[in-house]
Image 1 (cartoon, helix red, strand yellow):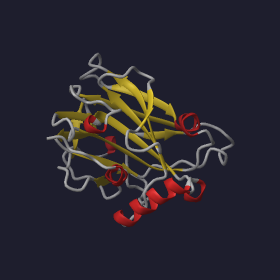
Image 2 (cartoon, one colour):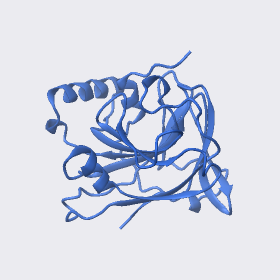
Image 3 (spheres, one colour):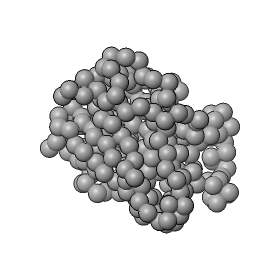
Image 4 (tube, helix red, strand yellow):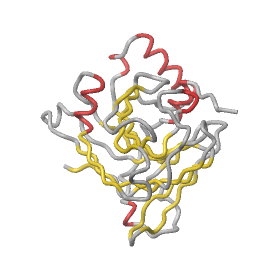
Length: 241
């Protein structure tokens, strides 16, 4: 039976805005050790949790995320200033990722099959008072239920199974989350792929105004809707100044 996630659950899954310390790069950590306190695992209520571990791969320590009919993200407290404060410049986010397979039944535009082999969230500090009354009400309710801050806008870079590279769409749950396909299909399964994105430009394209501050990054995968399994690896993730 498929898991039906509500918009509130999706927002809970994307919780950030916590006072975290600057995280060490994965490659600086010994494989097998517990994740340092600078990272935080974010889960969904009543959904099995992904397994997160530090492992060695090609001589470097990387993050491994195993999803088995489960979901979850690792919140990474990486920040960037508002784009206008940076003189309208760039905020280039760089990372490496790898997957062991595609999710056969996933469809990121369908609530019932909205799963991802790999995804990277970027969260922005959009002022709540700048949103419509309806959006403000939804976010206030989500924050009341969660007991913590919930983001007002986010980008989600995905490794998809069917939509073409460069395809952009809103989350089927909320138009406060823009998805962008960076890798698609099985051509590069099992290979490390390197990504570089100007998140300011992607935010402006999605929301129509200059990007506010980046408050956090989150990486992970999910297979709870499709009842499948997938393993994803993430190398170091950072902003290039």
